[in-house]
Length: 501
Ligand code: NAD
Image (cartoon, rainbow, N blue to C red; front, side, top):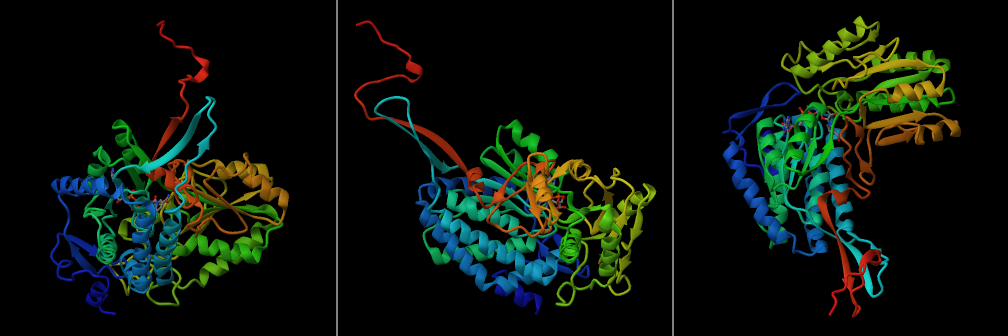
């Protein structure tokens, strides 16, 4: 499909996308697919001001009515699932299945949020005082700043946006500077949604295009009551103290270093499929990508030789080609980072299988790499870092307690899994002394979460939880209310405070 036609279908003006100062290159071949207009720091004032004004109206719209707007957005996304999925592939390089899968995830979270719009429940609490009632009420929090990463250019925004909308909060969104066109497409689809809906304030969604300095502008603005930031641990370390300085709220979704333990009773057929999907899917550029494999010594050799054979047949190439399973890395620096990690792992005693650049002759300006398996003698400094590329470090264990210790001995705590048919091992892994991650799975890999659960991780991953379960509470403020319907004024804790009259 012609690029201009694709943009037109999504409501983007191709002329506007050819006049800006930010060149957007497709990682597929390095070609410029848009020249996007960047915002200046001064534009932030207008954008945040509009969102703040919108908040004053939107918070008073009943939540089920707010949900109706999200229902219409889901309809728009269903209509444009294929087009938006294709644009995700063009801009981020993930294969088409994963590009459209990302849009499906947006639809799913919208559906979830529509139901949620009638379930923003508070508790009723027994009061110790006669003739009194206590309850909790959840109110809209205020405009939310969303900062997102390149690798899930639209889904992560939608997790935040769909919930923020039903909770009564406008959003100011700074997408990754590597993927601004998909963000503008989301904005265009939301504009169409608003036109269909009718009476909505301007400023429910403000998109800010630019690099980290604009993100910092969001971070420092006290009108943005919550900063939801997705990206590297480095970014989180900069963002968190800045927001804390103004006593704002953060929701951090940062890097992972996800592992799988494979026990002696594991179903290896299943494990091989799960490992390959989790380790090479999205070319190893998912926050939940499998990066460390901790294998029992009895099955180590069998598993590693099967994995190497599987890796040798993985189709690598243009992610628009339906046969391809691994697309390009996002760019040159990602490829350089991968090569540096492989060199360091070699120095630390690792045996590297794969990892080299491929298709360079056909795509000189794109970076395709063969996914790597690295057999490590121990969990070295390089293994403990997240390298955002398809590298799978493999280590051996004898005793499950040692395996769990190794598993948890990294700074990050996002996602994890165990393959075992031994109930005791599975339950030990899920227990308080098992995996220390926000996500812990049995007999499935660490990636590809559904929207119904709370998503996020511990330690350097930042502690945030987005998407399903009760993650909506991040976007609301809680008021505890006590109502006295008696004719007396009893005080809590039995305190007597009477004036002599
Ligand atoms: P990145 O940290 O380079 O950038 C992420 C976003 O933060 C971008 O929009 C960037 O402009 C902005 N940013 C960077 N520094 C900033 C600062 N000081 N202040 C404000 N904004 C700033 O990350 P990336 O390369 O785009 O994405 C890959 C990383 O994101 C990986 O570490 C991956 O694990 C992580 N990630 C985590 C999750 C999750 O849910 N836990 C999801 C996706 C990606």
